[in-house]
Length: 548
Image (tube, rainbow, N blue to C red; front, side, top):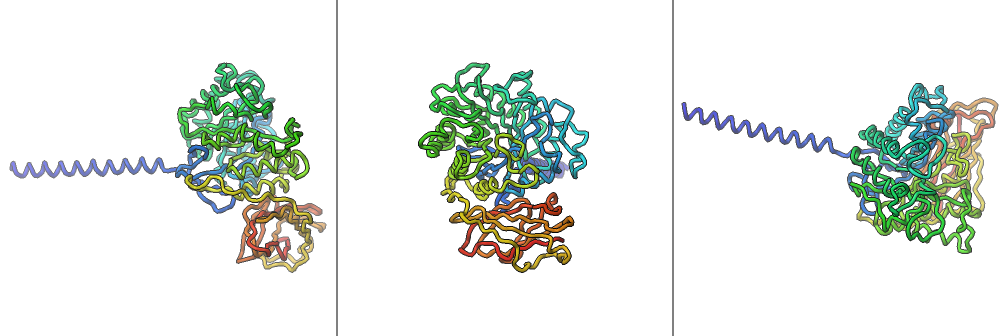
């Protein structure tokens, strides 16, 4: 009996050890699985390279959870910081359609401004609840509207960067407090958002305060004005409740000890970072973010200098880009934009130079703005809130086609592509070629209603951009349409206002987005693409549109 009891004891001990072993394995697997990075498909070139969230930083780069370098290339969609308490344009468009268009144009992030007052309000305005999915927004508070926009952005593969743009609904304050709000109000709003969106993985971070200026200082240790110290207080408060977010810190306007440049834009002066860096509890979450504008917003003295535009490179290096080139931290240009993108006006020259600079230095950006109702700059959309400003989109396409995910040990400064310049004689070709084979059976009674005009708007050594204008020349409304063309030695890298699909080796079929399917009599729909040249026979041929 004693021998049997010992065997039983040993058997029970072995079973207990095995049970503990399997429980340990189970717990280990649960931990691993719950910490697996969330994947979101984001890529402007439509290769659908997954970005593993959350994001962090290594030296000058933003990286995903697998250590791959991420370039943020986005737009500002403003409105929640104004008295409407909702993104603008929803009086004309379905919010889901708007997000789909942003994604389809090749952007991967939206900088979403808000005001503290808006998020404490119960009321929204400026939304037509009778338009499509906007009915989901009816009866919602501003914060609930933000929830739905963010959730839909995630479904469509778009990142969100939140931006504390104003305290009240009326103006941008000099400092992070004022206009009836305290520093505690500002930080409490940020911590509320950080907790609220902790599990909403496409919300990647906090742009702490839009454009400190005036009395705002950097590095003088004045507790009431030193923006660098305030950014540390807010950033660390956010990271204490949500360690996954990027903390995005803008510059000031002036009041930086030892600054070299006499003029800076509001929020654009980051000269103080070298001597007085922002100190966060998680140093790999810090991104610096200047704002930069052209002469169309304000004609700064350096736009009239004899060495313009060559003087811009030195300004940008001194003002902010030394931070990236010296591997201190990444740079995200949070705002730049303007109405002119030509090669003759000061603003157009400035904007072309900055796009080249962004591309050469692999910088992230969010363009100001998506909205056409920005009085100083206009937007990527035209005043109808549907059509795209083609010259702007074509300029930015140089950047969107190079959005990439690359290992951090690869060179971070690949050679910049030549700058597109408008072709001297744009190719304008009516659709007189035979109709290509489409995947639909067109209505022969309506086929003569639609005319296509083709323009090669930009043409450079390695690429080109084409716009199509589809005009309804009939007397009846077209409810849906398709466009088809053939193209031999070119590869599309970016398109807008429609969905371009390749069928076979050289056949392409273009279908409108939901909001652009209808064409009223005499109405024109715009769409187009940019492509890389693969040979000399690159121009689209046999272009035709049909109603379906």
